[in-house]
Image: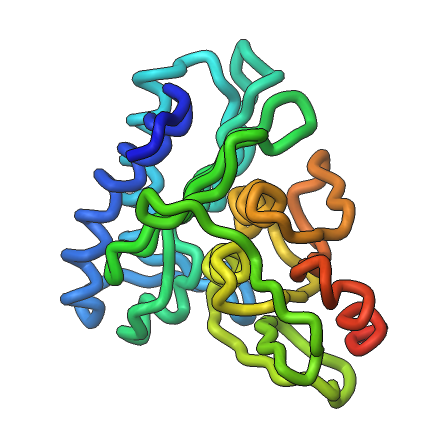
Length: 246
């Protein structure tokens, strides 16, 4: 693996340890206990177990860091300048239906900036990670956003509700973290979605930036109802015009 910071190494190790639980439970999804948090929002005991493993591993290494996680919420500890942001399963609906497209997402926010992040797809054994001023990587290989400049040749990805018909090619995958990782790796050319949570997108923010992509300004002091528009620089303005008020 490329030379990485101690903090990023901790994040990767924590995600790898939690992934063993998810791989096992994914093979027996019909046995999982599932509860409903909202109209389209579910949590399984797999989410809870994976999150506990991640938090335990991170706390072992950095006991004073604060934490924001999907299931446990906000935990303010002694060090409020450094905060782990955790989503144990981004793509829970996919996971619960046996669709092999979900990921563990962990990011580190220092003061009010995401400085490192990793997104790990345990089923495909694909890990995307990035650090500020170091670059973005996929399975130890440097990645960059795509270099397409014709919007009609691009493929975008989204989630949530769309108010109008859009004159672009797009897909819905069910995992915001992987959507952003795929843009960083050049698999998709752009991503847009409203009403997201910080833990859905935190790791993706640093991946996009370090892979050379553009992303709208996001208020990292907020944990919910965040909007994202990101793409390759070549088509960013064209994309914004196409999806205006989507």
